[in-house]
Image (cartoon, rainbow, N blue to C red; front, side, top):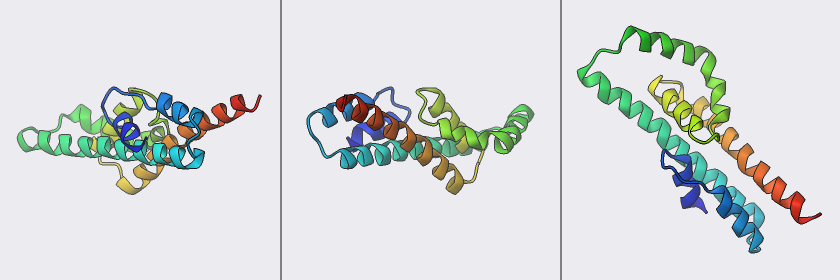
Length: 135
């Protein structure tokens, strides 16, 4: 569960929700597989954040940042931090997390917001599954 969730939390185009539900259906320890999914997906998000940081450094080696990027970076730093709570959204979340890294948002608060967003997603999936299995 951890590895698939890690891959899903990165820029790789895979999903992990189906596997969490499958494991739950097969009788896996619910808190354990849900925690593994949360941690793996969060680590995948952190890797995407690091790619944003690294991509910016690589670009800056041979280019000056365009003025419009600096304006966008300023706006994202000011208003976009909370968007990291949506890091769980397919495709959009990866873009937001990568941009956060490229915009040099503080990593500690970014990591906390990424964790919260991804945890809420898997806890929601678990809650729906638990509710449906007890009908």
